[in-house]
Image (cartoon, rainbow, N blue to C red; front, side):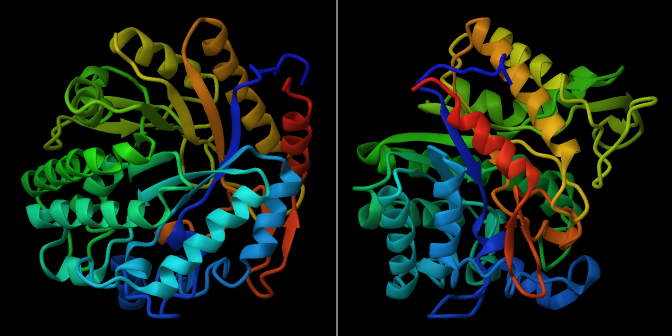
Length: 400
C-alpha cells in the first residue's frame, strides 16, 4: 500500500444503485419500475427479482453504519424515480421523498458526502407505457423530475449525476434486455440515445443552482482491427456530446474491463472477441486492470477541455464468500493506474468502488458478487469481506 497515497483532497467512496439494493418494490406508495415489470414477466438468472434485494429500504441505518466504519468520504447512490414520483409525472410520493431525506441526513451526520445519481435505469413503468426512452416526452419528464428532487434535497447535495451509463441503456434497449416490449432496431436505439442526451441537457440547467452536475459514462478502451469504429460508436458517442456540447462540471467514468474487437458483418461493423490467454471474470469480461491506465491516457489526449474526472464505478465480480484476495489485487492494480494518471497531471478527484455490498446484478441475478460487504440473501445478514477491511485501511492511511 505504500505507493497508494493520494492527494488530501481526493475523495474515497463506494457506490450502489436503487433497484439493485433497496427492495421494498411496492412499499409506501412506490410505483412499479420498468425493472420490476421485467422481473415479474420473466425473472432473472435463478428466478431472481429485485422485490427484496438487500432490503436497504428497511435496513438503512445498518448500512449507513457500515459506510461510517469503512471510512468513506462519499457515497454514490441513485434515487428510484418511481419511489418518489410513481407515474413519472405529476404528484410526488411523500414517503419516498422522506426515505431519501433520511438517507442523506444519515450520510451527513456520519461525515459522508452524498453523490446522487438521478437515473440508474429504473424509470417508472407508467412512462414506459407512454413510449419510454423512445419518446422525447420522457426527456421532458426527466427534467421535471430532476427539478423536483433538487427542490426537496438540493440544500444538502452538492454533486449530481444526471444519468448512469446511457450507452448501456441504449444497448439494452436494442437487445431487449431492459425493455418489456422487446428489442429495438439500431435506428430506434439511436433515438433512445438522442432522448437520453436531451434528458441530460434539459435537466442540467435545473440542477445548476444546487451544485456541480456530471454524467457517469461506461467506457471500455478498445483494441483490435476495428477499434476505431467501436470507439466512435461506444466510447465517443456520449463523450463527444457532453464534452463538446452541453458543458458538465465533472465526468464520471465507470470502468471494469477493456474490449477487443474485430471487423464483422454485424450492422455496427465490428464484434467483440477474446483477449488471447487472458482470464475472464464471472461475467466474461477480461481481467486486465492495467488497461485502465490506457483508457485514462486516451481520455486526456483526446479531449483538450476534459473536466475533472471521478471514477464512479470500478470492481470485480466473484462468487459468494468473505475471503476475496482476487478483488483486493484487482482494486489495488486499478488504483495504481489511477495514481499514475494523477502523477502525470490528470485531474482525477475521486474513486467509488462498485459496490458497497453484494446486490442484484440485473438480469444476471445474485450469483455475481461485487460487494465489499457479503450479503446472505436468505437472512440478509451483512458481513464485511477481506476487501472491506483492506479498503478501510487504505483510506485510513491517506494524508488528510
